[in-house]
Length: 182
Image 1 (cartoon, one colour):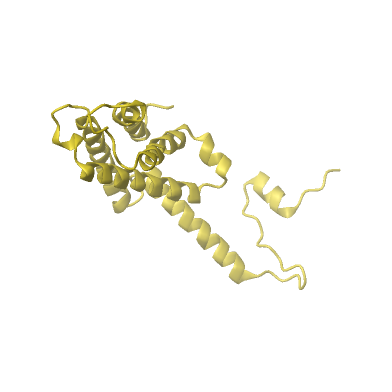
Image 2 (cartoon, rainbow, N blue to C red):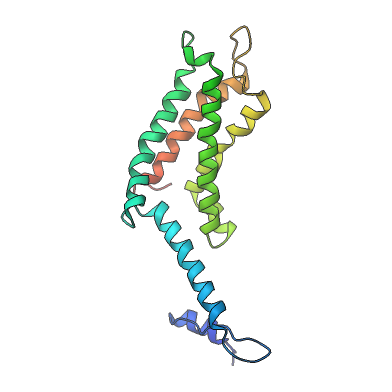
């Protein structure tokens, strides 16, 4: 006969597990159980905020503003590709790009914190797109926020930032299309 703990049996049967008992006294620690369940509820509510726009007013607002925000970030990146663009020479645009990518980092960290395991996080294709979307932050740091050379020449790093970053940012929008799966 195979022995099962009450928690694994309850999980297999779909029944809530009993709270953990203190090993020394054998008494259920209700305070610890209460804190554990409340922290899990907070994780679930943060996860729902990102994944289900109908979960709250703020989730709906976030979902509605994400699309135009990412579209604007794509336009900012593409505008730097034109030779006569004022944005091409502006260091303020590079600072704005860093701030945009920093906001993507915050979203990734929040999503990572509410996942059950790190493995679950990296098994989701949309999360991988999000991680790839912040990699240009390191390239910008390596170039010292200077996109083009003094003579206006665009090297490989510049080409990646101007040509590939907008495409990766557009891929971030795929998360919002429920009928399209990666």
